[in-house]
Image (cartoon, rainbow, N blue to C red; front, side):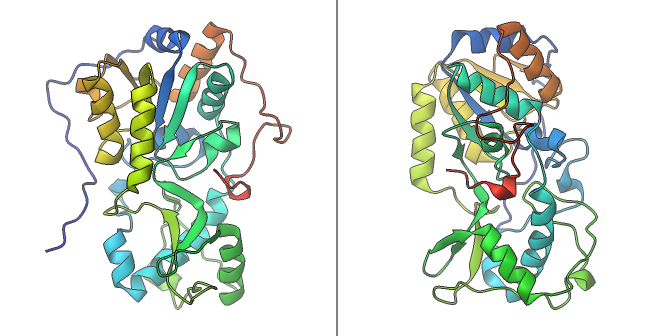
Length: 313
């Protein structure tokens, strides 16, 4: 029997309350060696909804699972129609003050690394370097047969050519780049095969029900081991892929601090949870540390690049 992945988490009554005091964040960053673990909540101010917040997408949308994607031609047609439309909007998202603050902390030597659970490329667009994309990136596409990797921009051009006139209006865009479309809007959307072998193409992201590649997990574990502390930004930590690093840091005696407006699965392992909007909080902390949120070199006049125009490392 195939099990659905865990998509929700129910807080226990004995979780410690959150605080609005920003000094714990300032003190942690001032010490240096901080490893950042970010989730969908850091991108909400860029117009990308999170999964589980007050207006989270899980209240109306069930993400595609790996099992469903690989089992059904119709599921893949539905996914690629919705994702193709979502990609156009997703790619116009810009980094917000939270992303810019993380990049600034990195430039000033306060961070040991950045792990993100997001697939939007906005940390890199803001200027952060060496970001580990735990769940992959929507910028890339991989063939499930020959494992050839290709650009999402190239696939978008192929899908546009195969589906002239496909211009439905989506209700919303979800954190995974999937747009909300009715079945009649999907219609007979044509899916493009791998150009190398004709196999099935999948975005190079970790779907629900799929495992993170072990080498990537080990890389993240090394980052946790080498860090002085762990700063979680905008993640409910519901899924084990991110939660395990919080547990490992706490078990190693490293301070864990969570910035998230709602309770998280990791609160019991943290010194405290700072329950404030991320952009304003990190901007204020940067000011207290004397760290300017300047534009990253090589970016446009606003210091921003479209996620669709970057190829994260």
